[in-house]
Image (cartoon, rainbow, N blue to C red; front, side, top):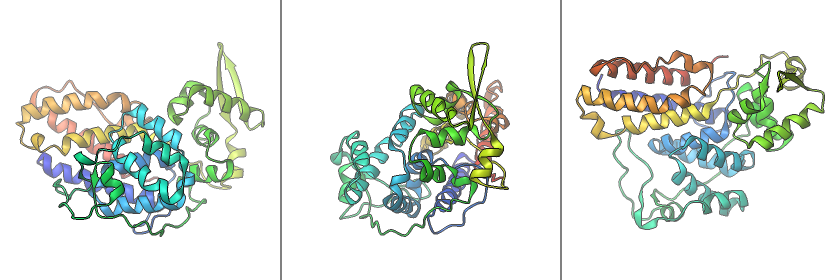
Length: 344
């Protein structure tokens, strides 16, 4: 298979996954997968700002969902995630925030939009065709996106999204936000549900809050009697009573599964930038092998933070010469298989 054909396979997989996740949160247009893996709205938004540029219908469906349900998005956590993982979606995210601040009068989006400079004179097409070619220029582009450097048809933000289903395990974070408010308690509880014990550093790395915020949250939840504190060798670890929490959140259902989506999405975004490069399509296998080896070495630290699902990826950079191409593509396909693998 050529790298260009492999790129198409990757794009189809990523877009199918994104449609499923957004549909699970209430976006119409595609059936949602029923699964236990918890959706991370902030990570999903960042990944869609990159991959959604290859599906205008998906991108605009995301905008309409945000118009109706922006109150469920934690913008500070979104900014922390963007910076920590080095997502390339920042400029597009700034345009999205600018498109939301006026109709919603939401100061949190206004601040995010102000973090990104307007670059109207360097505007580029927002959307691409499936083959990677930019969408044709239009005579009257959307003024908000154009001011932020992206050309697209005027965005119609007619609300059509439904409210998320709180009984679906993958909507646990949204359910907790509706219950507790949009704050660190939601991610801390969701993360701990699948673990016997975890330390402050573990929770901090997975939830994208400041360490002090996580520490204070853990100490406060401990006072409720629903979070246990254990001290061993001078280290504090925390654990939830799974039965008591699940009896409250989802009686008779298995515990939802936390996945560190953000580092996985950031790794896939970086991989995509190589697969989508026409220069890479024309490389010799030996040159492509060197390119892919460097790429996979860069994303390795992120994949190691995804969790147990990353164990299926070999990341064997010891394979010599052009033979490494096949191994690298196999690893990338395995990563995409993670997106395709709902577990009810």
